[in-house]
Amino acid sequence: MSPLDRRSFLKSTAAGLAAIPAASTLALSADDDPLGVRSDFLVAENKTYLNTASVGPFPNVVREAGIAWVEEQAGDPLYARMGEKREHVRDRFGDLFGAKPEEIAIMYSTSDAENIVSNGLDLRPGDNVVIDELHFVTTFVLYRQLEKEKGIELRIVKQKDGRTRLEDFDELIDNKTRLVSIAWVSNRNGFRQDIRALAEIVHSKGSYLFADGIQAFGQFPIDLHELGVDFAGTNSYKWLFSSWGAAPFYVREEHLSWLKADRYGHGQQKQALPDYKFELFDTARKYEYGGAIYGTVYQLKASLGYLKQVGLDRIEKHTVALAKQCRDGVANLGFDTWTPPDNPSPIVSFAHGRDRADVEKLFDKEGIVITFREDKGSVVRVSISLFNNQSDIQHLLKVLGSIA
Image (tube, rainbow, N blue to C red; front, side):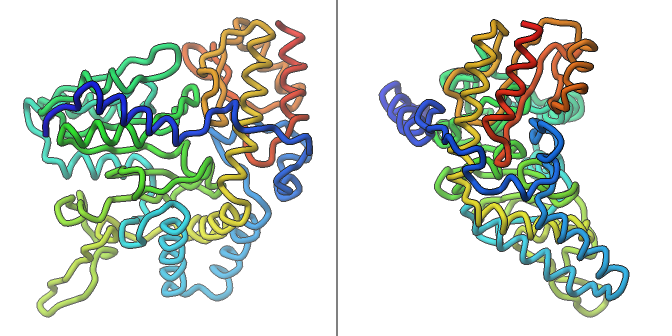
């Protein structure tokens, strides 16, 4: 397809940006528990936990689902029942995020998803893959290795002031670009990509879009069909508030016929045929070559139901408004913020400018849980979840004020 002309590019960009609420438009409630969920999270009782971008703590319903799994495994294990739970997860994930159950595979990690996609593209010398600089490290490892093995070119859209710009993607994508892979929300600084507008650019060049959504699913409303994503991966242990190892992988229905599985096993058989031959699934189940981590599957079923009950729109409004309060407060204290202003995600990153060991000791003493990132832990990453409140943010800012 021909490249976007200037007018249509700006039109698609504006349309995409209009669909993403700016942080400044999401008002902060004066209620210290506006979502009515704080008592569901044990971690909120004795810590200022601002670290869901690393590991999401269990709400009570998920903890109970894990206990139920252990008791079932001990007293009445039944493999067929476990398989049913995986189908329930497929249904619930599709319902919550705008996809058909047939488009959802339950893998073990987000990395599984991107490896399946990159292998299925049959990449060859001369092909290129475009990624963003704010991506997770797995993507760099994967495509640097494919540069060596397959002779492809890796092109990296550089971040500027904490964001990667659509016009820079447009400049790097050409008729040799087989895949564009982005962090939907960056694990490094929380930058939220305008994925609908990017999908239009990618498709206009005849390429495919893979979205690493591990920091996106569970944060805000998502309709995969409407957004135009070709492939997306996530995992269960961050914003989906479950254990490790049940990683939903979305493949748009039109791609299922050509995107091959990259390994094979008993989990893919739809029907056994004579002479040890088999009919395999032609839905996304064809990527599920083995058994699942069923304890996590049980928990993920519970957490998806919990998120739907709370409401992703309410979660977004609450957490993004708190993140804006946090970012503004950090900036007012004089710290160098890396997260763009009015960025609609609950992740805020800033350089602390102090000795990491001293800052870490102070946070530990105060019961504040965050993540240190970047070069030698020079950046603090704060991630704000549905159970956090203004008191948590004020606690963080008060402690930061003592070293500002």
